[in-house]
Length: 456
Figure 1 (cartoon, helix red, strand yellow):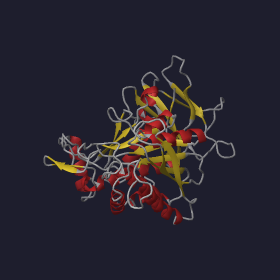
Figure 2: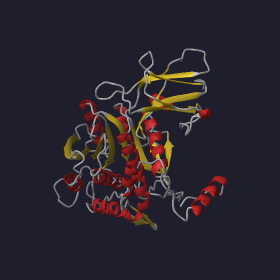
Figure 3: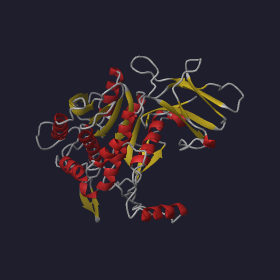
Figure 4: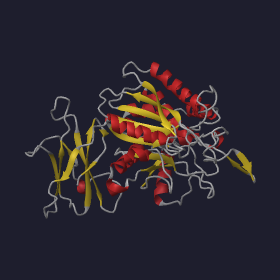
């Protein structure tokens, strides 16, 4: 459990818990009951069963057997496919039927971490939306490794790395196959991560070439461990979201997505703190989200707060009294369940929320004026008319802060009706100086906000 000093805020929180008759943190009164119900269906027993099954394949190394029915990446991919196909067949008749596709790509042609040229399997599960003009991607990697990255036959259980991410995707398919959502959710089960992010590179290039209308990518890689080796810190109520995209600085689209995940978690999973990490990934390392970022997509990595290097990429053994290896017995399944809920809260709200407004601008950027006027293009309905079911919310923050304010300063009403000005734009004017604040606008439909567009 976390250790902290008994500050006033902590004491106030403790008092609040006592007054609630011992009940834990609850979701906000503003939460969507459909999303709340979906999150309640995340099952710790199911998650444990998935990971036990995945570990039973002995190794899921990218170069492991594709023909053995019980061991190797071929058997693991078939297991994932069978599970998802079962849920697809039993999907709610109120939603479009989910689609399970086997994808293959070739590795080893350019050397690298391969000793041969081979066709490698991946899996894509599509949960079509009822409107379907945008897509949200959830991603995790199938493959495992030990110390020797070229060893494709030794026991490499990969319970946390990345069985935890795969469990997140499996629960997402199981639960969302019964819930109709407006926008499409795709779950990508990628291989080749440990050999050089090759599976995600293949998918990112495929998405770019085929013009997938991707709104957001959430890569889940190691989300089930709470112990830090060496320091022995334990942190079971924090999860990191890595989001940096160096070219865009403080307000990249990926950082807006990270802030969105944190905001939705605060509403639906208040006992799990999302820590925004403004790096592309851990120090001197990388993850599958990076190839999507390089292709211009909005992408982040969700990752446990503490890492245990006695587990990750280790041979299973006991040495000098220390146990090594990525086994399920070292995982914290309650923590993993909360992290799956963080994903679902973000994905479902994104799916129900509107698109990002286009051409957000500071309309009086060149004027010496202490007022700030923002403008943007209104979102249109299918008939090309202004969508009157959408309102717009203005966000702001002081220039030294990293997160948008929960409330607009000075009691200003920051909700805007979709009414065009004479310029054809929607406009908002407020008595806050553009010198002192950053501004953004986002569309909101039936209580579901979309991603913000920063006004520049």
